[in-house]
Structures are given as C-alpha cells and as structure tokens.
Amino acid sequence: MSAASRAGTWAETLLTFVQRYPGVHLREIRRRLGIPIGTLDYHLYRLGREGLIAVRFQGGYKCCYPAVSDAEKAPIPEPKKLLLALLRHPVPRALLLELYLDGPASPVGLGEAIAATGPNLAYFLRRLEAMGVVVREGQGSQRSVRLSDPKAIHEVLLQYPPLPESVVDRFVRFWSELHP
Picture 1 (cartoon, rainbow, N blue to C red):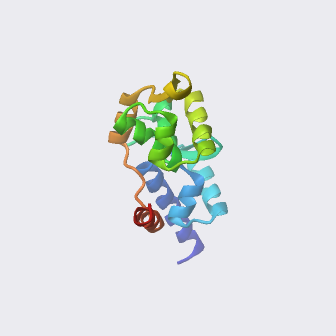
Picture 2 (cartoon, rainbow, N blue to C red):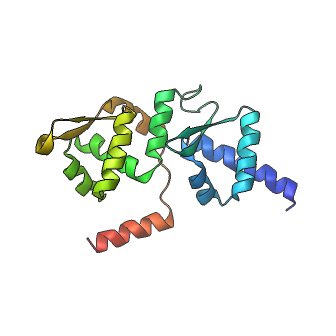
Picture 3 (tube, helix red, strand yellow):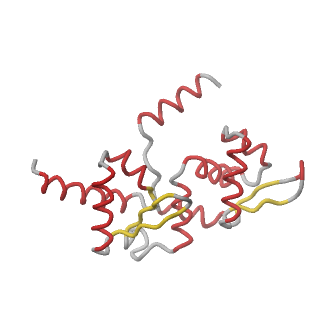
C-alpha cells in the first residue's frame, strides 16, 4: 500500500471513528487506531480545515467532534460536548455513571464504589463541580454529591455509544474481580 493510499485510509478511519465516538480524545484515538501521533495531528488539522471535524481542548485533552453529528443531524451542542468528553475518560465516566445509576452519594461512598483514591476522587469532584456537572451539598459526614442534570446524562448515554472495551480493559476488570 502506498503512503498516499494509506493516508487516505487513515483520514477515513479517523473521521469514521470521531463520528461514531464524539468527544474522544487524541491519546485514545491514537491508542485505539494505532495512527502515529504526527500523522494523527496532520489528519485532524486537515479534516478540521475541511470542516469535517472540530477539535476542542477539554480538561487538558484535545477532544474531537464531528462537525455534524449523525445523532443530532447538526453540530453537537456545547453542554453535550462537555458531557461526551467527560464520559470518554475512565474516572469521570465512573463517577457520572455511579451517580446516574445510584443517585446522590457521599464522597466516601463514591470513592469506594469506583475504587478511587481520596486525592484522585477529590481532584475529579472539584473539576466536575467547577464544570457544573455535579453539585456537592452539606458538610462533613453529611456531605453528598449529586448530578446537576441527570436528564442530560441520560440523553447523552442514549444518543452516543460508549467506546468499546479493549482487551486490556477487559483483562483488568476480570483480574480485579478475581482479586477484590
């Protein structure tokens, strides 16, 4: 396969992946698709210049969105872009899903439910609260965390598929279930 035809294939593969999984970040695309980082940057730039992909910095990551979403038949609204970017990262996704499925919880309960360390949990809760995605209420042992808009999470979960689990993800989950 020539470099030119492979480049066309990479651009098509990248565009298809971003259309299927909007909000995915650059490192995850590289990991999932195996596209060298320089090539990936080039194709993101080119597809952006052609108006097919939009790249946005979210929480220190380059997140990629299709210019027009198949689910929306229009550009993805900014609040959904924020939620998609968060749902593409393991710890924020675990926090949001835990709160969505089980409702408000204490920070300690959340940390236990998602197996997060105290500092890691505190960091992500501060970020999620600053973004307006979660609300922390109460003081001390009465403190609880809840989603600010569970309906928005519900809509995003219904409209956009999660990234498929990789072999490594499945192995880690399997291993952790064997050794609680």
